[in-house]
Image 1: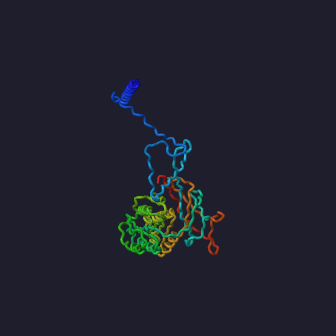
Image 2 (image 1 turned 90 degrees about the horizontal axis):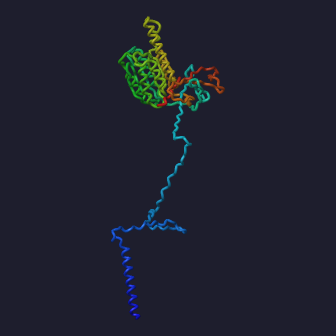
Image 3 (image 1 turned 45 degrees about the horizontal axis):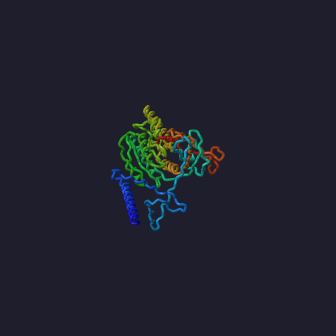
Length: 400
């Protein structure tokens, strides 16, 4: 009886196990019905950090830090510039300010003997621009080597007199030079000729003067030659000087007097000294002969003298009209003293506009009380003096 019951029980358990296996097999075989197996949703790593610290639940790829080499230091952090915020409604802008500066060389010479007056102080100078008093910002006494161009009239007109005077004057100038000075020689008739470029060799200058034997043309184009000289010197930095040895008469220039005077006033850092030639001939002939032609000749000579004076005074130089060759050494001695010994004033103009206008300058000497300065000699006698400076300058254009 017991054996039969056990057989029935085993048979039932076997049927249940077989049916359960079939069901499980059908449930686990969806491909038999042509369907793609469902993909399980991706598991998000647990990013929560444990309370005790340490790594979280992320079990993905771990990037290991690079092992430091021995002695390698980490690069310093780049400095962070502070951020500046504009006020509300204001855009970015840039500001550029240029303060004009004017430099004026002033010579103070005793009128009687042209001796330089030393010992003056900044408070003794007053400088006016277009009549307005300016405040002197810089002051010093200067004495330095010179850079000079010797501009000589060398034409066929009155060759035996005028050109001999020119050569004598050029030799006298060469004898006054110092080893540190730079000098060039340029001649003119109808055209200009560069006989010697700038050099410190005084013997070379003497040889260049000696090479002037026979001129080519009778014309004397002083205005054109002076314009070209100024144009060349404008390319050289620093203070420059032009020593003009000429009769002053212009016969065939393309430029007129107004044009060359405009060029003279508009060229900075150039001082012109003029020495008239042919004075002995003029002393013999003026007002004595020639009738109407003689009167026209004398008038031309007077006009030439005024033009030479204008060129020099406009630039702070001086003019000389010697009659005899023996006067030349003293003349060039005064020029050298005036060139080398000067006072230099610097100021910022009260009119800062850079409009290209010409500004008139005037320099006065005053004492401690603001009264005109009086100079006396050893015997307490008053001495008259000359204040030598440019009569103006041309302001820069804003576009320059």
